[in-house]
Length: 621
Image (tube, rainbow, N blue to C red; front, side, top):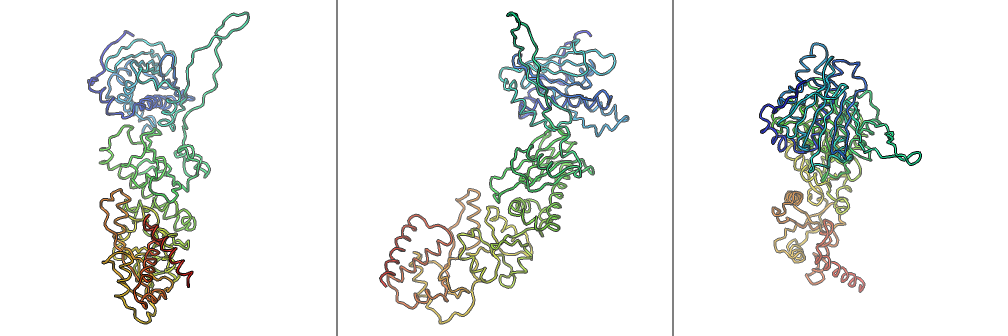
């Protein structure tokens, strides 16, 4: 062929800056693009001549001495005309015309061709100051072609020297991007983007041959035998198989290998959909350790076994980002804008379907394997609660499967809780946010046979409010053990006590002239005084602390309840006010505070000093 020089069509001067600064946010994406094209070339060969495609592969060579990175495939190759069309006309998709050509002869739509020639190939100019293509078409009588360019805007074409079918793309890496001449850097990129591509991919490092001394001092060049290379990718990843073909151990091994986890997942959902869209994948439920804050899931999105991105919330519902998994949507382009995803009905249907499959898995487990479901609850409840708050349809499906774990270790649905406790706590769920610190208050309820739910995670602050406003007419009210009094009052009051006298005493002990004080008979006579904190004010302040907005917190609202059935309270009411009665009142008040939270430094110092004083007084009796 006669040498050809020219400029790439469609105003490359405007296209190249877009490629470098907008289309690809990460420079290493060029490796994915070139390897994807090489895999397409082999897929094309398989469709055109299946027998010839046996054993085909993609080879990536790192030649640090020559400052070159080479991508070699033994696919269909290209003729001069195809190079002109697929490479020199940037906007043209070679895969599209190929599919049209072979549509009548085979199942072209299911061929797995990615179809990203053109702009995808030109991403190499982000890292290379010179690029060459050596290619030979599989077509009979074809001549080899060599294409070269130093800037992606002008090129030369001439007869090539390749003698075997396929294509070699050679990048001369520019000085600023020499990280891509490091074998481990290239391996890391290949494993991230190409770990599931359908064609075997090999990585090799080219080294200068060393002189070997033999005989009587004569130097001879002896080629060293290289170890056999193994593919860096899994051409048939587990998610591409039917669920019936996969074992539990294979699911666990895929999880450990893909996400570099040492701990096995709790369980998983295998997605295998052919209609109304093509969707494959596996979603894993990791062990969340009851910790919602700081949870980092990872959903890897693939297109035809080519990695696209992590955690694309337009495709994967936000609350599912707590999971780990692989989703493969073959119809997605590799480079896709957020606006496209946000406004595409197809994407919304996929997102809705994934949500439904997750809910179906969980509700099915609850109905048929409740004991197993309860065993998973401590790990999965943050995910389920978050999902219910974020997705109305998910919440509707899961509403009968939301559990409350009690201080006694039981697991109850809301309806079951109401059935067990409704007469004693009508319309209310009694809960604790710190079972150890609130133990005294908890015992007041459990001794009456009232279940106390444990809601001690950060997400529970929002979740209790969500359950109240979303429950409609049948919604329950959540009351913490130190905010609920109605369920604890009752029994004989005995002789009426002087409320005004006790109120004045407690207000002096607390150092507040406005503190609300009530004198009521509690069902248990062992607790003389309780601090009751307003539920809604406390929740508001808790949310402010969680979201780092302490400037919006409100002053805490407390009231004191003196137990009129307590012998200690009755003795205080009976004696005249003096230093000793104030001393005891202050001690009772601080003990009530301690049952809720630690005292401040000065308060604790005073509490200890006062305790020693009371001990000395007791010793004198």
